[in-house]
Image (cartoon, rainbow, N blue to C red; front, side, top):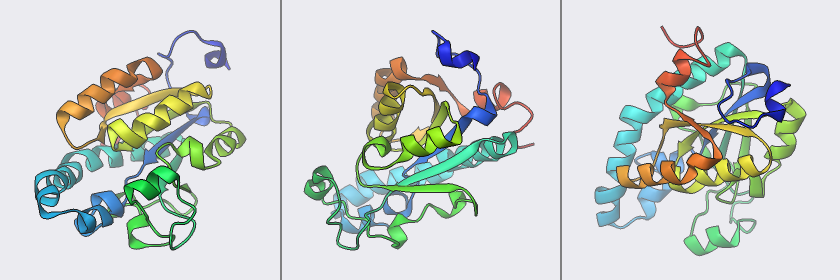
Length: 221
């Protein structure tokens, strides 16, 4: 395929070789009764987490839904990854997650995607126990089996798990597009700082730009 030997990141999506990856759009960090809210002190809950959750649900998730609608219509694979241990007690978690205190038990409410982005019946869901989905899962193997060479990445939080996934995907030879306004973190300054830092690893487009170009004709009416 032409884009496999390219020297540019600015290559339009080829839907049959592309996948849309959602990172951590789950109850643990995005539900008012999720694990992060439950475990936080009152100041963190009200000053940091609740405004973030409210903003993501009001502004970011609707764009994610529009992007997914267009990706599905174009015939792209849609893949979801979320923080979820393989065990109830989280003994399989990364050392970093153990130190941080993250444990999302297998099959728990916290491990579920937010309701607006529940996976379709035949869409791929990959649990992870590290910041980068490429470190603690077989996603690279799965993507290559699917024939995927281009990734569109969206999710939370921009400067942690999203950025980690983009860097690793780039290093593994994928052409990555970051859907910039379908990503979010706790402050606008952190979000913009991450976008600037990751710019050399991916093509960056807003959802509106993708719907008007690569996915034209497949978006919501």
